[in-house]
Image (cartoon, rainbow, N blue to C red; front, side, top):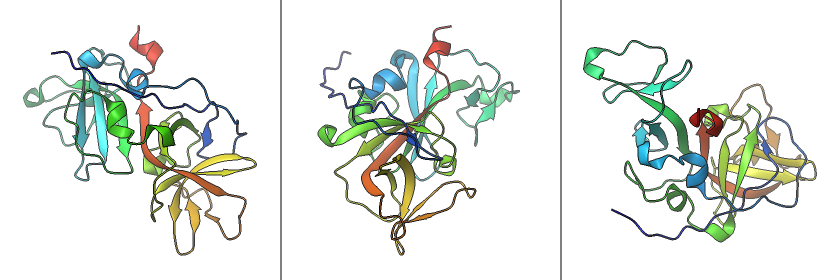
Length: 223
């Protein structure tokens, strides 16, 4: 069955946001990007599977990928992912390679295993949304890794616990916002908090809706 829908691409910033130390900012963006093209171009062989009990993490499984060393493998009845090479139990059958993960920070309804558009699922306000890549390791505790693509909404109300983009003259940071006192917190204990009263140079630029992380790069998919 052929589905017809309209997807509005959103800007992908040419500068990365630091999940470690600030990096230089740029006041321009690359050409707009449709998330589906970046996240799962081989959608005919992919499916989306929720994991955990909080409805915040999804796996993108790609049946067209042959496992290589270091891959995460998903089994239908398994309680956790297994690293390749592994010895699947007979009752688990053949596993499927996890090509990417989606971590939600603002709730979205479950789109099912084969959504018409992941882009439309994540982007509710396209004219207030942009995409930006993360650099560094300070937010790994929140599911943001070096190279993760972040979906940022500048029109969202700010709540305690939100993942946010904070900008200054030195660049952009991705951190968790905590109130009382207002501060920016990392997902890595090696990084100190930034208390906003003592660092007025930081402005909150938007709320991160989701982080998208590839476990297989595009070049590897084509091999």
